[in-house]
Length: 548
Ligand code: PEP
Ligand code: MG
Image (cartoon, rainbow, N blue to C red):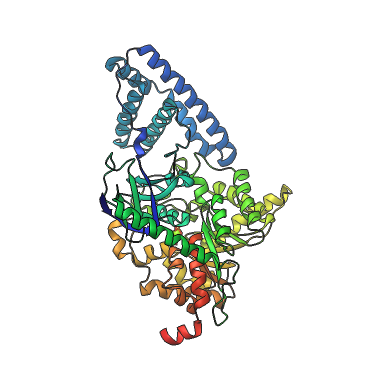
């Protein structure tokens, strides 16, 4: 038995086979070949398929995002035919008598390095394109589908790190737990683990090799440990604890159907955070009163290309219909920083968290924003959808959003397309928004405080950097004061304010939030019933007398 320590991002116990997930399964082996012509014929066929895919992407992009943004696929098509690129691949195959996968990977590497070193900005950007095109050809050569299943039985996934885009593509029924070697407890991958309600560890120094892969493992989200090849004693002890936790969960189920009201009659809305309509089952099972944060960017992260208005409409409509009149707050696209989508073709940034993300992308690429808004407005005719805008810092941004929303509505009117009138609120997740929340409150229907980013930006601590986890302190008085201030400003303007960041689920603060008058807590589905229990047992008047 071996024991490795990590940092827990969600408690609970998972017991099962360990599966080591290596990103670079695309990793290309160099293999000697005998039939050079056959190898080059494979290359020609793969290129043809790549050209077909790119044409499809171009057509789709032309329709959805306009010609200027679609041209990138034309550029890729041209690169496929680039004489130097093709000569390099052919030359490597012929002279070294090696497989075409190796030749494509080597050419891609060499060319992208060469472009990256150029002075010209335009040429430097082509480095990513060459890499992209080479990867596309490799995927085709490998005959991979779009989403590779990682395991065939429910397993503990051990990975070096997982990007949000990779995490959303994992088959959730097959994941008992995540354990990553790197990663921070505040990252979106950690948030996803919490939403899935599975034990997970980050920052766990375990080897990603055959001493771990395929072995029996136990993840203890309580202590932040993973046991590899556990001995009989630990296995028995952990199995027993797992059963006890299950019983505790069952006990909480008896709270289903109860109103979220304190002993002295103060009500609070307990909503769920989701990233996918597949999470709706968890929302129902845990008796959420609504959805407080649907991270719509995960729809984008799961795809290889911009989701169409119709695709999005169907998803939002399904959420609205399933929740049957309960509020469904859908946050508009919050891409950028750690949530990267290749097809957005974003430039490298020195400080991505302070960079081009969320509403900043939507306001500068209104065609992308409008597609989503049209889908949201249309879907809101089918239930109680509310729209929430992320990363707001100023009134100016709200005015610009209002203009775009008016244009979208005018277009829908002109096309006689039916739509509803969703509530529109904003996230308060920058110190600027908190400080001008009295002004912002006059412009919107509600506030939802994003404590994850609010902590990052207020304390100047990168939420992605595991070295800074000890400095990332959402209990800092600066954060708690801002929350209290935002709630007060919301109430003065007659609107409600909730918390949808991870701090909302912090059970040591539930009493404090109630005392501040927080109207809504939106948490991972698995946290709803434990918080309901606290709400039911709290007397806010007494709490204030004791603590304030
Ligand atoms: C937040 O910042 O608190 C939030 C809820 O948004 P995200 O974690 O997706 O950035
Ligand atoms: Mg945020």
